[in-house]
Image 1: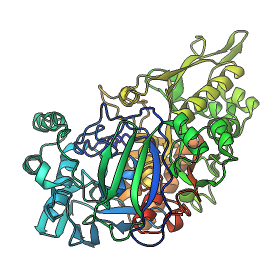
Image 2: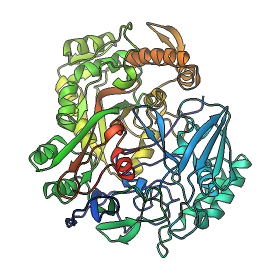
Image 3: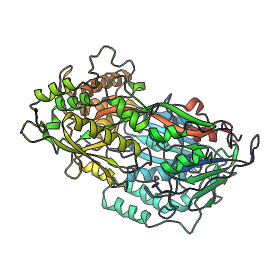
Image 4: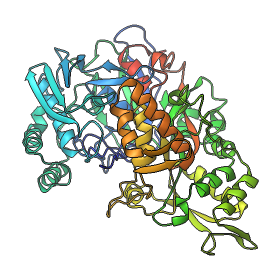
Length: 594
């Protein structure tokens, strides 16, 4: 079975597809000046956003993975657009560079809007889009959903791109339509090389792909302008402030209501201070309960909160500790945790929610699937936890719990430095397990990118990690995350060591998780629903990840200073890190100056 891997984070998008993402955290504060208010199209208002960027290390090469200035930030939708953005409430596409998107069998046709230009004066054409998609395709990790099924990408004429697939299912087109489009005038040589290599069957990891990636990584374009085709263009780049102005020939330039977009540099502490001082209009930083309480009395502050499709949980390394292979041990751990307390401390009131079912699916996807299923529901019950551990051969002695082989149960939980919700979750989980008598310590890994490799390599005892669906709003995305992310099972990337083949289910008999996963993607509507139900039951029995809580997506706005109202409108279910609803509303002209 091919592994189904992707890497992602709410703070940055680190795509395994390898191209067109970036952003690393830095700190710094510089207050924004209040702009004069204005009314109507083309007003001289300013919209101020806060995000951690670092001009000392980031480049202007938007084709470099994890390194180009602001290309991984939600604000990137304003300057480096995609063919389309997803409406998470309907799973329908919101055309951006595309004017229309149509399926004919296994062929996707993207018809582009006419009249758009890059900031270097060249027209936006189908060759820009096709070349950008091919760069993504070449650099996509094998097993990445959508990219594996893509067989051909063609610029049929100046404004038409066709993408062919070996098989289709809901979301297979996600990678192509969410590609950040690059200008052929700058990246054409790399696009041509990518096209030839893809046609020759070269994939990520092959020598030819690695060689091209090295060519791309060697360029920074710091002595040239950042070429964009969005509504906004780079106007001024400073160490603590990046300013954008309207690009008249850019996408939706005739609709936006702000003449200036300003991005202030700042991580969590700086964003809190800027919100306190009403210096920014919007922040997507992940804030803990204390910070949120600090902001509660700020005049004009608005918390925008909707149920998220992903949650925070724990990965148990079954390769390192054979006792974790026993579902009774995993279920016992769930009965140890008071997840309400963990969620409250990690995210604060309104920042999390406890799932209605422990099926591995977020509530929007679980609704109605398990009405007649006998799913175990986990609440803090230490007697039940002790019973399950004893059934699994554990003993509770004077110095704490001992495993079936007689050794003391001793583990380390790892989080990530600077990821407040991860750290607080890990610290609370450590405390609650320790109080129960299991010897657990806590450590933060540095936020230097190495955590992604550590998870995949299985370099942990227990790791704080996402569960459910942090990437795309299809049910199969949850199964991808729950079973296959950080779980390749290869010599170099063993991950958490959870098997995904045949399983003897108490409720279902013999099932195959790999096969059910593919059915949840590619079956008929009825087959998908049946596969989702079966996978939810198996998840509930085996807990491949321990699901502590689901995220309530919370972002923060200041209304009445520079901006009249910040409202996600019809896109309220959109993820704020992948298809940010406020950025879509800005592009549609629905957010305007005060």
